[in-house]
Length: 302
Image (cartoon, rainbow, N blue to C red; front, top):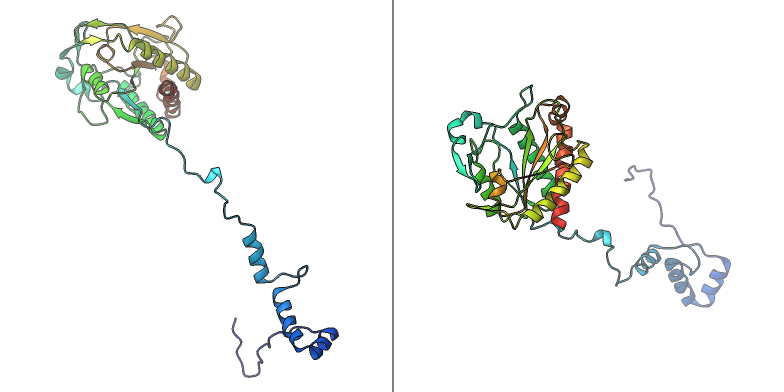
């Protein structure tokens, strides 16, 4: 604030108060007056504080050896950093436009099988390929937040069809994945409902040899099944696996040709109205991805 005007006298500096005793001492001992000014500027030991006293007090409270609290420390590296997971979204939304290509037979070790299929859909037309890609993206995001490196065997719009089942397995092998998962949804008759996880059988034929991955794949599959059921509330399949939620097969190229721990999950039956209501619900698909992720993370942590 500024003071303006010819009739205004600016405030005068406040003079220190001096009692009778102080004046008397000053008259007797001139140096006492100087000491009094110093005393007033610094403040009495038990009296009011000054800027200098406050600063000294504040400085005294800080120890030169003090260290930051644990809360201030940067977070350590994720325990899952360096782990690799390959996610295989079942089928491809444009497979139906490439029937000649996907009908080509490929060697799966135990026999020859079609490169790929179109997959199934709900009665209302929501395709399995749409479902698997959506859940795969959700799962990828969850795992990456925990430091996992995630690779998809294919993504939206690329490639325009497939890839073939043997190539899907090869992608996981080439990535030296710590775990691989193929995501599907079933097309069983109405009334058949629930989910199941497919495990690789012990196969040693042609170009297939699953003997080294049967054990760890079973561990991976059981963990996914348990967590998926808990998080989603989806029951174990009532038509496959005898109520265990697990099924072992040797006729799937994606498993036969894998050299890394790998399983399939059939997330539900798209042709059953109860399951279809869940599979077409975005909030439930997020739960599906969460349940799968917890099973995978449990496996990766050992």
